Image (cartoon, rainbow, N blue to C red; front, side, top):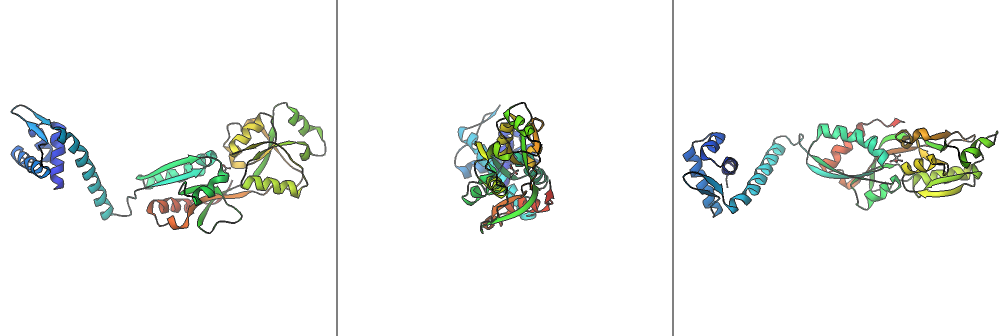
Length: 301
Ligand SMILES: CC(=O)[C@](C)(O)C(=O)O
């Protein structure tokens, strides 16, 4: 089946007029008519009902529109790819990251991706960053923005895209916590405070390490998945918490919490990056995203 016949068919299906369709196709009306007949012979059914005054699509003609459109689009895509394989990359990439990462790092990556490769389709899932690496390992998503773990699984390739300190925060509103924060003139008694803690993951480990190192017997008021909700609970006066600075910087509640400065050493920050299974790096769509991430300077936030 010739592609030009499909083009003629679509022109006639659109205009339902031999004269106008032949003009669109830059051929004469008798040539168009001959070619449509030829196509109908090939398909084996009539695609149009013609009488002296009008042209109408048959039922088969209606459904042939989808076939013709898809075939021509495929052909076009194929031709473009063969001509200039660098220019158009097609594909689907699923990404997992926290809501905060979607405002910050992912936003920067996708901005560049859109400018360079508009045919890559992205599916995004947001949630607790503590789950990010595992979601890539178990195939939920192809890529994730994650905190760099102390030990990276060998199947994972990781490119640094930023760094965030961890901050201790407390509420600003009048509440038992703020009273405790101001009571002691020689610093905060951390063992006397309720903590809002991450349910799991790297920031939970950092908090527990900081408690141990400084002999703090932290009391847990609530366990939360995702750092954004921790800021919310602190702002309500339910406790104090340790959260990444980038989460606080992007929080609509940042004015409702105060940063607490411990007398002892502040907790260590962490690196943030894009994670993917090594074996997926050959995929053109994934490597396009990977290359963009590599150009983002690992900047200290
Ligand atoms: C690890 C990560 O994705 C962030 C941006 O730091 C977070 O959401 O905590």
